[in-house]
Image 1 (cartoon, rainbow, N blue to C red):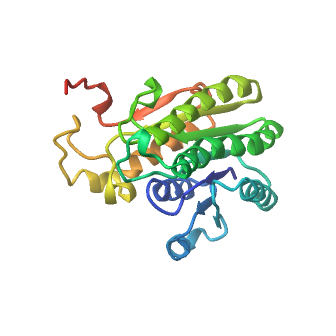
Image 2: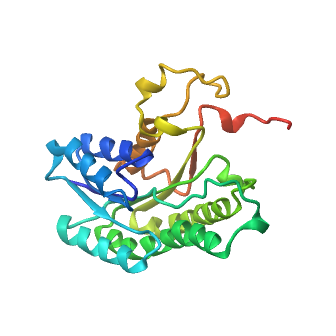
Length: 252
C-alpha cells in the first residue's frame, strides 16, 4: 500500500486530498497546526479508515518537528511514496511590502519556502531508496510566470521560490524515479475549499469561464493524478486548475 504525507490535511484543500487518497487505497498521514478539535473530527469522519490514517500535529516553521514527523511516519508505515506540500502560512491582511514587519516576512518565507526545502531534504533519501516518489506542491494562479501579487508580496515571493525548487528537484531526482510538480488553484474560496465538484456545480460563478467556482475536489483529483504510478512522464510542471481564469488577459 502506498503512503502519502499531506501537510495541512485536516481542513481546507487538504481535507479533500485526505479523502481522495483514503478512498483510492492509500494510507495517509495528515498534519494539522493548531486546531486539534477539528483534527479529531476528521479522524472520526474517516473512522472506517482508522488503520490507514494517521493524524499528527506539525508546525512547518519548526525544522525539528518536520524531521521527527518524517522519521515517525517512515517507522510506522515503512515507506513514504507521496509528499503533498499543502501547508503554508498566509497573511490575510492587505499589506504593502514596505509595511511588512520583519516577523511577518520571516513567517511567510520560513513556513512556505524553507519548509519545502527541509521536507525535501528529509524525504528524498527515502524515495531514492524506494526508487519511487511523488512530490506535489500547492502554488497559486500565475505562479509559473513569477507573477507579482499586490499586498501579498511575501507569500508570492515564497511560492515562486517553491516553484523553482520543485523544478530543480524534478531534474535532479528523475534518475531515481521521483517526480515533482506543482498544482496552482484558481478561484477557490471559503467553504468551496472543502467542497466536492458536485456541490460546486450547484453554484454559478460569472468570473470563471467554466461557469462554476473551483472546489477542493478539483485540486485533490489533480494531485491524485500526479501521484499515480503511471504519471511519471509529468515532472517539473505547474498545473493550473482555474476553470479557464489563467488564460484570460484583462486590461485593468
